Amino acid sequence: MARGINRQRIFQDDHDRQHWVNLLAEMAKQFRLRVHAYALLDNHYHLILETTETNLSRAMQWLQVSYSMWHNRRHGRVGPLFQGRFRSVVVEDGRWAYELSVYVHLNPLRLEQFRLSKKERELARRELDRPPSSEECWRRLERLRNYRWSSYRAYAGYERVPAWLTVEVLHARAGGEKGYRRIVQNRLRKGADEGGLERLRDQFAFGTETFKRRIYAIGREKGREIAGRRELKPRASFEEMVEIAEKITRERLSISLKRRGSTVKPLVMWAGRKLCGLTLQEIGKRLDGMDYNAVSMALRRWETKIKHSPSAMAAIKQLRETCNV
Image (cartoon, rainbow, N blue to C red; front, side):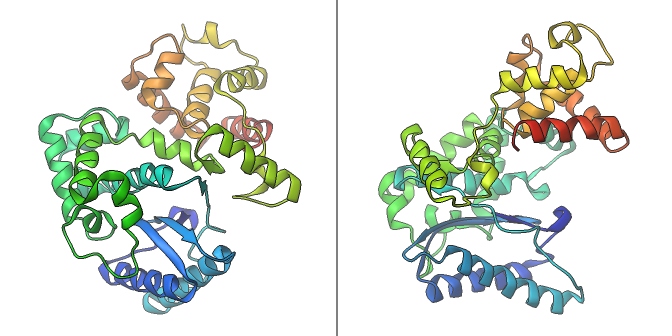
């Protein structure tokens, strides 16, 4: 995954997107990579890659530098386009890559053009992984079918598979095109599980616990930086973050849940969402069964507050540093 600097758009129009896809095809050939899935959004992209050589960093550097130079010339801009180095997660095998591909292919549903009404936009902002109605599910599925800038159409049989895209491995897991369409439809009926993507962003490996422990041990032994050295440090659990937040704010969460004006309560909610990757419903359950709408409103107020409150920003910074995030 790579994101635009300051969360700015990296794709201005379809011409930009098509050029990036062309570069992706060239990268696969030049660096002998297998591209299993991809999805482009306005200000970032997702890739599932398999390397045949130890050249992932060189390949990604080539892709981003090539696109940045072309993009800057075309749009008359200067300076970096991407926000630092790409982020990577090690995936255990085809079974886990298959699960990851579903998350990647559902990610474009977060784009504004997929939200058909003011009501649906509000629901999407509150909780994308809320199970949608039959009508909402049909609408999202129809737009996912017509979205040109991901590999989903090729996986689902709506367009020809390009020579540089490897679909056989994941198709074998899903049972072909029909099986892949069915699993995406079923996932949409349950909800897109945005929290799943949030959790993936915070991991250095995706697979069984045994696999993650092995990758962690390799990183410690060789001193390697996998998705940043900090990603290899044990992360604090939600319960540990509650204790840390209570120390930072000098407030007791159990008491603050019953009153307004608390600092620890929104800080804990923010940590649960941003650092633990919990859904709004999961956060609500941990906070004496709060409704996810109430959690969503509290988080929006907190996001607004931190833009103008040095003390709130300082609390977040201290929490991040303590939790090695």
